[in-house]
Structures are given as C-alpha cells and as structure tokens.
Image 1 (cartoon, rainbow, N blue to C red):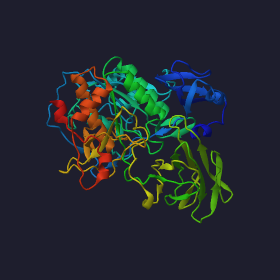
Image 2: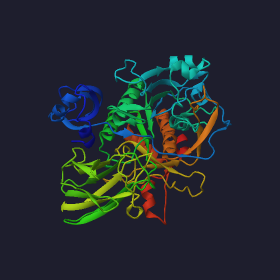
Image 3: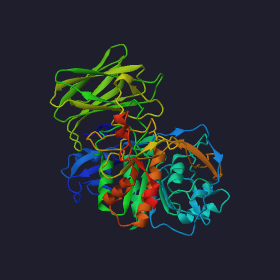
Image 4: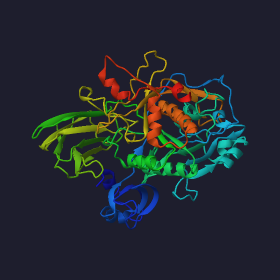
Length: 558
C-alpha cells in the first residue's frame, strides 16, 4: 500500500477522502468510489475511510494513492523587488487568439493592466481552490467568472468585491508566483514587456492553501492538480489549449509513472491541439539526491543532515529495483541504533523512548514495479544528522536512488560528498509528452545554464528537461501585496525554471495559432526543431540539463 495511504487509514470512518486511482480497465470502477475527474485509466475520486481497504483490494483497482503535496517550483527573488516600468511595445488589443492559456499556480492579480484589454479582463474564469465550496462538482473552492471580474474592476475595492486577493500570502510585497508567471506567458505589454501571446484568454487554477485530508497545508496537492486540469479543459471546450505548470517537489521515483504524470500523458495523447509546459525544477544544487549500487550482503552509509533547531517534519524516499531486497539500519548522531528494520515491514523509529518517526517499506509499487522505502521523521528528532545504512539482503541489480523531499521551512540534505546532481528534475515533470523547460542566463553571451536549474535524465533514461529558456532576473508583472487594494502598475524580478517555462508556453501558443490541429508529438517536434543546440566541451554532464538546446523564438515566429 502507498505509504501516504497507510498514514490516513485511521480516523473518522465517515470522512470522505480525496484520492487518485489507476484503474485496471478505464470503464470499470470499484464500488463505494465516487469518480470526479478522469484521464484514461487515471481518476480522481472520493472514498469514505470505512471503505478504503475494500476499495484498495478491488480487482478494478491497479493503484491507489493518497494526495501528495505539489508546491510551486522554488525560485529566487532578486534584490530589486518592485519598480515601475513602461513597455515601449504597443498593444494590439483588437485581435483575440483562438488558443486558450491555462495555468495552475497561485496568486492571480486580475487588476494588473497586463491582463486587461479594452478595459475588460482576459480571465475567462478563475477557480480558487482554497475557498469554501460554492456548489461546484469538485466539492471545494469557488469559481469566479469574467462577468464577476469585470464588475470588480469597476469597483473601488475589487478584491473585496469579489472575495479574492491574489496577494493573500504575499506579506512582503515581492509579488505572487502566479501573476509573475502569467505576465511572462501572456502579458499584453501594458506594464511588463509584451509576451508572445498577448491576446489569449486565460483560465486559471489557484491552488492556494488547501485542506489535504484534514491537514491544513499552504500548498496544493496531486488530487487538486488533476482536477484543476479537468477544470481548464472543460472550460476551454474544443479550443486549443496550452497549460503552464511551474510546480513540483523533490520526491518520487522520477520515472514518469506517478499517477499525475500518467494522467498528463493520457490527456495529451487523447486530445489534439493541447500542450502542457512544465518547469524542470531548481534542484540541481539542493543536495537532495544521491544514488549508487549495492552488492549482496554489503552495507552503504548515507548521512542525512538536518538544519539546526529544525522542528519541521523531514522525509527521505529510497527507490530500488523490484528484484532486490534491502533493509535499513538507522543511527543518530551519537551512533545510537534507532532502528534495525525488517524488509517490507512498517516500523516505528524510537529515540530516547520517544517516537520520532516511521519507516515504511513497500515491495513492487504497481506503477514502477520498484521497491520503495519511506523514512518519515517528525519535528522532535533533536539530532544534527542521522546515518541511514542500506543493507543488501538479496541483490541482483543493486541500483538505488534516494531523494529528500522538499521542506521550505527546514530543508535537510545529504552529506555533500555523496550528493549527485543528475536525476534532479522535479517530482511531476517526467512524463513522456509534457514539455519540460530548464533555465539559462540570457544576460550571459555564453548562455550559461543557471546553477540551480535541475538536471535529467529521468531515472529510466529519458531526456528531461527538453529545452532551455531565459530564467535569470526576469522582470514581469507584479501582483498587489496583501496591503494593496489593486495592482499598482509595477513589476518584480525573479529567477528560476518557473520563469523559463511560461516563456516556452507562449511560443507553443504561437505554434498552435498557426496550426491549431497539431497533436502533441507534432507540437513537440516543431518546438524542438526551433532550438539552437547547446555544446559543452568542458563539462559533459551539462548536456543532461540542456535537452534539445536553447529555444529560438525567431524560428517559431517566422
């Protein structure tokens, strides 16, 4: 059973849980399961806790997963926070693109001039997932349509009028992630530089702060992400759609087989005129990945370092080949044995007679057919580091990969000497058909890949990221801070692959504007042919961060 599913097994038996499921047959569903969204054999669903084990054991179920936190890709704020800027490029407001831009992110400032044409909003609809349920089919959040947005634009207090403030969590006025990304992808040139897609309509999903099965998290989760994609495509109807997702954490197997990634592939291969563009992540320097090979009856020590006075939970995932059998011994910084595990058993980790964590060990995860060890540590560990000792019980292949999950409040790391920077793409960008973007420094004549931009390949050996785009100190639309009553025509500067992805998304919109009936394979081929190759004579590993090279907009626009 999925480790996160085990954690939520116990509680109010009548509580309805939000889950993801892979079906054995896309037309057959288990009993006591309410289907919400479906992409091929992947569904999001609601199941009462009392039926969870029964559904899990149903022949109709191939895989069942609890929600997994999906944060926005980490990004870098620059010292220059906010400043006024006027684009020199004139706005052509009379054309309307036939391609819809969809975005899953958080914090969309509908009052910013970059998203207003002829006095009217370019947003068709925003789904604010963190709000109370307005009666929609998903059972949470509220929809805000363009009529409501236009009414709010005429009000002195537009955010209050509509009950939605994009800067809700922007306490320091540095600008919300979603507005900045949106400006890069489809800003009209009123304030920021004009994008390649200034006239497209916008359908947005604000993941915001959500309840994930009873836990109040400040991020979205995998179930709400899938349902957000469903919302965008439903609202878009038969029109071409390009969706940007600058989202993702560290963990999982990095083989493109999470249920989110399988849903993305199902979506893209079943609907023409559709593309999903994702950031590769900013985890090249995160010290959150290591891998190696273990032999039979051998031991490998993996030091796991914690921040001083860290009181946040920490998580490590170990993925290894399904034919092998490993176990782990866990030691604290005083070399005291905290756990000597038994393979494929779930066991409590105890330090000084106090429960400090749990080690969950699963064989044959049904999507990857790999074995999975999850070590979850609560905020009471009171240690500088632990040593995770892998033990080869029965080994034929021996390859393992370890990932430390992202923790913005207290990121733990591997000992730098054992860190490996390849295979560091984010947790949900490894599907076959999404377009994944790394970031380079566009101010550098050598087009140096930014040091934090994540590296492929995927663990199963495929190229990710696939293209490179500008990502250094990108000036784009700045949302209102939590203290402001509307946008004040300002920009902010951020760096990251989060900023590179929407640049590419805007170019994919240009491709579909010219040829709206292309399928995803044809879209990818045209985009990749429009890249200038990257050459790294002094560092062969850089090619794993470059893909097909630097996307050249002139080759697409002409």
